Image 1 (cartoon, one colour):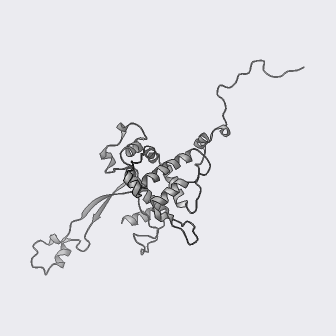
Image 2: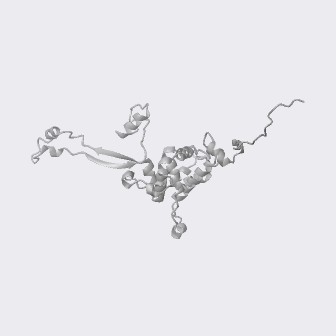
Image 3: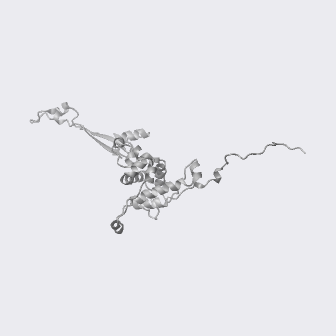
Length: 263
């Protein structure tokens, strides 16, 4: 009889090999090459696209984890005037967590219901009772408005520090006027300057007022520019060109549309 092989004793591997098929769904979701999807619950693609975009922002998710809905008074509950904003943000946080635990498509039922309660315009139906198509940009703007009104204090600190020590939170100077997490993450300080095109120079003003008898200084007619600052959460790109629907400028690139909206 001929035996082939080693006479030494076989030793088990120090690290056990684990296949992804043997992992629980929560662990599989962490290693999946693509994120879990959302079920379309009747023309809810506008909502699903915004959720998937905002899900990729870690600061927003940290702020939502720290969000604690304010207590509701007995009077507001009895009168039915309690704010729907806490329900909207809480259901968004829960939806993010549900997406983290699976690789299968998740039906956003609770978040869709909270959206229609907070924004009744998204609950509109067609002649046959089917949900109507909605605008993703409009939903995004409304959602940021709610976040701006609710996510302050601890939410702002937790979002910008990743839930770590508040000592690492940005200073008021670094926040540059942002008082909530929405403005801190998405806010852009815009400068707007208003000028008078009617009298662009002192000479033009003098010519226009040559018959005025009581004007001693012609330069007084030249209004100085008025500069103001405001915080915006988005840049508008009008694909029609310009800042109104009557514009005839062709927009072929994103930068062109943004430049036109700022002009």
